[in-house]
Image (tube, rainbow, N blue to C red):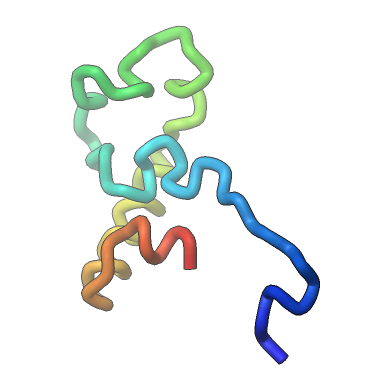
Length: 77
């Protein structure tokens, strides 16, 4: 049975869009958008937004759009 209520278990996603990476907030080879978390130098956010992460995020957004869903829908699915 695939009913999650069987175990009386809930799920709360923490940062399902990976600080905007999985939403396509950052573009490969481009400066961080003004006002974005990663643009705040010296903060942990800018350390976590990496070139590899941006490349993965770009592909993730592409997969979502190819399937006619929003990146958020794919992230929490």
